[in-house]
Image (cartoon, rainbow, N blue to C red; front, side, top):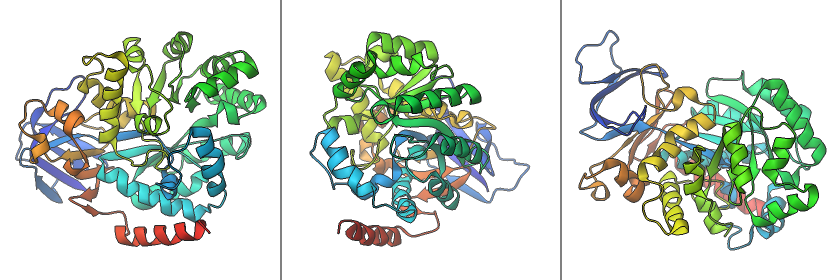
Length: 424
């Protein structure tokens, strides 16, 4: 679909945070023009949208989530991480079918779209279900293996990697595993061999709690990061989710291997897991991206709240209000997330890039006065400001209406009915 957005402010995020005035055109899934106002076009537009000075920016990238876990939203709260996992989450997850995952992940996509999120890095069971959902709804999804001692196998991960990286333009797949403490040494060695074979990055939950790190030290005499590196697993990069309890040596490995730290402040706050060394990580030049984690631990899938927590918690940890600027955090949410997820054509707004973007409504009280739009986004912005979300050149959300093939109320009714059945 060819769409012209005009009378717009645009934040391309190519090299800096400069905002321009002008217009942006899309032609099918790509951006065909971005620049000053123009009247002529070789291709007739199917729609022209006057933005009245509102802001276009690259879509947020949810760089770590478990979409289907919306089914446990507000179900297993106020518990320590291991009790939460072993006594509440794992027993309920064992009841899920593939169609349950489809339904509850569709609920997550509604929330992503209303938060300006245009793609997610999803780790969960039945990747074929999430791949089908991505195509059905038009939502860009990067699938990630959650390999552990309890699910999947190395051969299944190999098959999924080959299948889903040639499945559909909206779908891709990365190598990964749940965590060191749920994955045997034999499996870890197999993952490392596969990373070498495909020259592929590897992603996992890493150093989320002190207990996790202490356990790994007892088993192997190394931190999770050092163990993975010793196996050759990190030679082609990748990323770690949470990374709260990272040593200086761990961070040196991340820097050397070109790894990304994916911070999940909402989840880590609610589970009392701790606060990562964000200011130090950035000072070392290690890229950081942002994830919401799943709705079972967060409980919402809201990038605005995550951005505020990233900078707010870092300022508290360092007792320094100047660290981790709004500009840096916004870059994490858009640019770094895309690069971490392998979405190199969706990291910024530029001609030829994918038309994955959203429009921020500046004509609301929390965005006024316009002293600094970027700071307003991070420090006072909210989901109420998301006016439109586009993925792959298609508008999937606009002013409270969703265009994913099913009405929200139908999804809500099915989700609530199924949850009551699961609780029996």
